[in-house]
Image 1 (cartoon, rainbow, N blue to C red):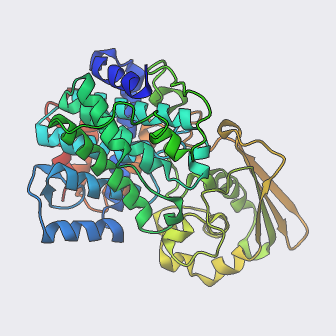
Image 2: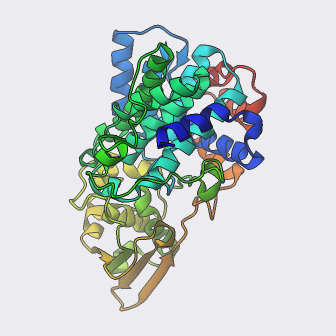
Image 3: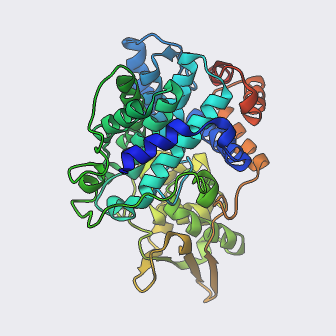
Length: 449
C-alpha cells in the first residue's frame, strides 16, 4: 500500500472518539498558542500588506481574518492568518517535521470549519489529523529535505492543511488521495527567504494551497494516486532524487505525533535554534553587567546553525535568525520578548558593540540528533572570571512544557495588542472547552476587533 493510500485510509477511518484524551488536550494547547501568535503577528508588515490587498479586492465569505474586522472566502482568510501565525516566528515546533506544525494547518482548518458552520469537535479532529500527516511524512524524509534548502513548514504544511480540510469536507478514500496528490504539486518554499517577509508567506501559502487542494478534490479534480511516493513524486523530488529504497511510513496514530514526540511551544519570538542559548544566556545575565563582558563564547551541537543567518542583522526580522544578536540582547536586557525584535532594538549601539564580542561555533565532533541538542554559553569578564551555563532541554520543549497558565499568559500578551480584555477572556474560555463549542464562528469572531 502506497503512502498516499495509507494516509487517506487513516484520515477517512478516524473519528473524534478515536482520539486519545491526551491528543485532544495537546490540540487545545496548540490551538491556543497558534491563535495567540497569529494575533500578535497580524499587523506585521507582511500580513498587513495581504490584508490591505484583500480589502481592495475582497473575496466575500464567512471566514474571519484574525485581528482585522474582515471576513473573506476561506482560502484568502487562510492565506492571511497563516502568514500572521508565522510572522513573528513565535509559533510551535515539531521534531518529526523539523518545522512549525500548527501554523499551516490551523488557519486552513479554522477558515473552512467556519465557512461550513462546523463545531469544535470537527476542528479539533481535523487539526490533530493534519499534524499527524505532516509529521509522519516529515519523519520519512528526515533531515535531508531541510538541508537541501526547502522550508519544511511550507512543503509538509501544505500536505497537513490538505489532510485537515479533506477531513472537514468528509472526502472519501479517493477524494482524500486526490487532495493529497493536488497538494503535492502546490507545495514549495525555500530557506533562502528566511529572515524576510516571504518566510511567513510560505506558511500562508501552505494553508491556502492545502485548503484549495481539498476543495478541488471535492469537486472531482484529479491527481496521481502515487503523487507522494512514486519515483517522480513528492518524496523523491524534495529529497533531491535520493530516495534509495521504498519509504516506510511510521504507524499512524500509534502514538499521535501531537502527543509523542509532541509540539514545543516557544518562550521567545525568534528561531527555535537560538532558544537553548537564550535560556543559558538569561541564566547568566543577572550575574554580570554587560559593560563587564570581555567575550562570550556560544558553542552548539552540529546542525544548530543551519537555519540561522551569519551576517550582521539590520532589521528586527533578521535579528530573529541571528544567534549573536539574540544572545547579546538577552545579556543586555535580561529579557527576550516582542520588543527585542524591532528594527530600533537591533540597531542599538550597545547591542552592536556586544555582538562584536560574541563568538558562535558548532562542535563538529557532536552528533546532530534533534533530541540531543545542547548549547553552552561562556562569559569571560574583564576581571578574568568565567561564567558558564549549559542547556539541553529549553523551556517549552515537550519534555519541559509550558503550563496551561503560562500558555494563557502568552496568549493574553499577544491578544491584548488588538483585542479588548473581554474578548480575550471569552476566547480563552472557548478554547479551553473547544470540543463543546457548537460552531467555531463563536470563537473566530472573538478574535476580531
